[in-house]
Length: 392
Ligand code: GLY
Image (cartoon, rainbow, N blue to C red; front, side, top):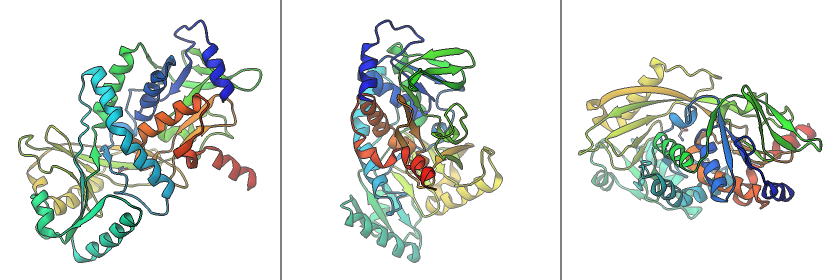
């Protein structure tokens, strides 16, 4: 890849169709990557067959909570999550200051609420594990928890407070990035990628789309949940990404009297507050292939569990419910890195952490294009699956 950078830098005549890098996919991962590539001085074209942010990004609650959903069997994921949470303030402030748009980023903290004594025992065990990893969580008894969040169920048994957690509005962030990229002259081409163009030496030379070819020595594939079925990615390289459905419910409350100040979580639901008084209730986890239907059962489950956690949701206006598809991998780690085709980089498979991991993914991809080592995302190397296949 060092040589790719050289070739990128050697690019002389740039037309709209000959950018230094092409990013395929305008979800948050793709747009943040385009932003970061532009930050390092590359000309970029983004290609998206639908609307920017219309995949998992547009459904995500936007919790920047690295340890809320963590399985401690995944220490590499924890490191990526923590690094990305640390990058968020600088990332959003650069986008906000350049565009004048609010991304909904707020450093709210998170409260994980145990609703009975059994859950409290389990939560205390999780908190001890978190603290054993040097993480910033602490236990609050019922009164202390309700002092912070008076709306939570009076029958709670205790809670874990994570002060460092934050929240962002993924749709607002996508819109801000879209405007920021447009302001830098970076187009989002609405067309479908149907093939990869290779140079005689086997390296990437661009993509073929339903409206013609785009040349570039660097192609970043960020197709989200479609990565596993994207036929334009050669079969031996296509990552084993599958869609995992998540339904969310959106409710409107009074912005002057928010239902909660922090992200709230219980064992079965989370509630993410928005600056305008809305809350997002999430999310179901369903292995249903590419099914994006909102179901009565899904909405019922979310409302029931949210009501147990924060009874005031009963008074809020129902705005709607939506389903999205998370890009999941067999080991729950994302897929970020170079491939066997020189110049083709993958950035997908973020499963439940796509919003959180956007800054670290974008920065790592920019580093890879410059010939740097993958660093904190090295466990996300796409070749782990290629090697497995070769060995099986
Ligand atoms: N990160 C939240 C979810 O995937 O539901």
